[in-house]
Image (cartoon, rainbow over all chains, first blue to last red; front, side, top):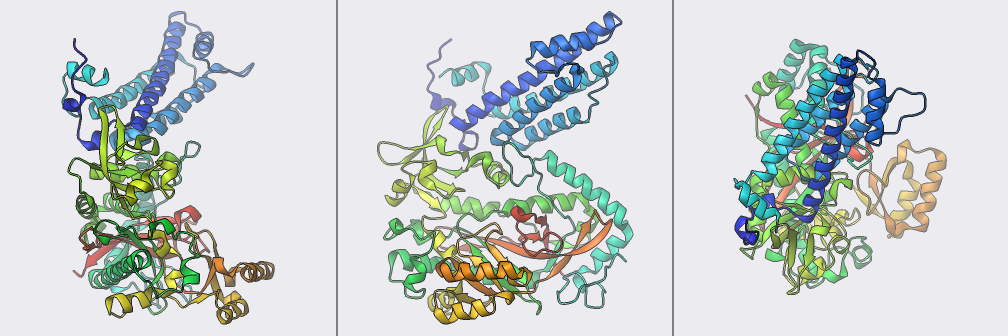
Length: 168
Length: 460
């Protein structure tokens, strides 16, 4: 595949310029959303492990917290700290989204944040954790789809053109 | 009827002195009676949740997220009254622009030199630099209040970076969606400044390959919501300082993933141009880029220069001012200073370069110790302040959720107006109503004020 296409032939109109600051914020937006998604998947994994062993999700959540660098105070249950890390990741994503994203995406991130803030961080029952993870992952997917449409498909580029544009 | 007991001395824009609704407000009161406080409060709360979802913020920064507080009961202005306001605003904008041309490129003799050359925002390097189309003031915001006679009077002119145009749009959008049956009861003029903005940018362009951009101080800026909203609404890129640079030929370019693209018009939402984009001032002075507003416009934003605006209107336009303004006192003049020091407990004292509601002292609200301190400040640094007659301005009904009912609060009106490079002035119908906190007169958002939708309505 050639990556020597004249970038101007693929350049969007001015309203969708990918400026330095937008690219910077898009990258960090992606990283924070990715971290949020990973934490939710870790919660889901811990819930599955707990339901299969008919035990508490606590040990699996502790392992997940350690894996994702979430600091859990000694003697405290891990779930509140994991929730807090998840909320912080989404707040950081929202900061970046404010700088680059269309309104629809900002709304999607705010909806995601609202779901996380309204969840009960004390409920460690496997079913509650699985429900929370499933709904949150749906929200993440919706938010990601908006940004995908807004920034990567807006000009109707083919996959090859997209690669060319970003490989310059 | 949800009328409330009226406080004396202030006009309530919704009600007559006996508490009955004013004619324009009768349908609103009927609707309030039908809907009831609980329903209105619930719908307002829903709308505020929506505002938070839309990140409708003021004072957004990385460490604080604060949805803009909004009171959705609309403030009503009749279309006939609006016409007079708009005509007065356009008159003022034209006169201020002519003053700036005279100041930087002519022989300005209206404002005394000791006043104009001590303006914080007077820019000597703009002297002799003619902006495209001889227009300095592309985007103008003027703060008005309704006095005890019921007339709108001008409190201050904003020519540097006036903000709030999108707050009015958003407040109207939220009110129309929260109270659709109320919106249907009135013939409300749409608030749509977008065509005037597009025309402004198009009129300023001289390089067909160059784009217009909005230069933001990024999300650290208090009004970042507005920068983002305007960018999305107008399809104009939102850029930060790091995105722009001055190229070898002296023009301004934007760094993008698709190459470095030429920029011809910068709608700047920042004050210190060269701090954000080194070389931008020089590019402007060489005519390589247009700035909206033009460099040096802030000289006419000064609260002491404000004193001479009526004279500017008479001298430059040969007209009488349509909008009145309060009597002001130049503290550089010995007699005026003596008067202000004697009557400081009755006057408002403002810092000449202050903005956002900061630097304003309201005499009757100051303690003896504060008055003494203010007197000493004015004696030591008279060139930094102005004294102004205090205006008892109007109040409006707001939803007071803490008290579980309706209350009265002071309000003002910020009207926005645009002048394109052909010199044509357009004033979008409507403006942002700002509401002061309880027991206060300062309405700015940064001082804890609320936004309120303004509906310009035709008689049914």
